[in-house]
Image (cartoon, rainbow, N blue to C red):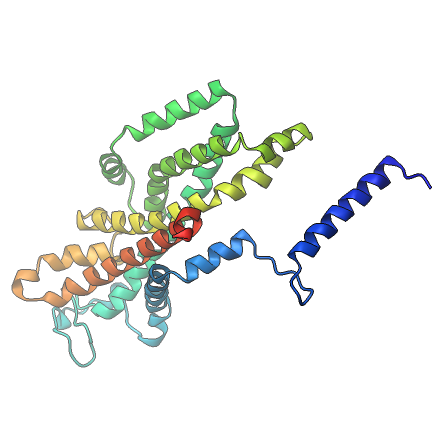
Length: 316
């Protein structure tokens, strides 16, 4: 009985799959497969750095966003009470009050909301913009890639902090404006990283095979390039969160942060430094400690993600 070419090919494929399956099947008859994503997640969650970092970030996020529902304070303009200014920690004010009579503990919660919202928003925006720009540059013809990279080099040559200080003085500082300005200055690094990954991936065999089968550029980008480069983007996003929070604190310390009655940890530090030599330590140490712990938490998560995505470090 004769077989057609397709039937013969199907039979050989089934036979080969059956052979592989038999070789991989344990005594119980079940096949256990573990994907690379699961291995990466297992390595990440098993890391001591990841555990400490996640604990810190989750605890601080709960403190900032859930804490105000449990500890009620008035942090608006009506909360100003000069009769309770500079009170030390005690009953009714566990961390004391500042020069305007605001409760420090409640101020930490509200300021943390602004800091965390800015950090996550900048990380998300820079990841999207930088990934698209870098992927397009890596897949574009050489002359287009050269032009896009020269534009990137020109923007990177400008001192970010100096440009940010100029823009903050030109535009009225608010949360949305600062997020926009930080995004415009932060996506450049992501674009360069993604372009490098795409340049290394575009010469892989499976990308050549996809092109030979008629795959279009967008399909190759979505199915092959971005999934393999997403690890670099995620790791960089975690560091972007901490860098953005740190930058906002630096701007606030220079008096260019969020206008009152809005607050963030940098503004609290800037206001508290004035009274530190008067012995009002509760106006400086709490925001400094929570700011440091937040940055450490995100950096630990980023380090753990980088180690989990690196096969050589997993083998160690």
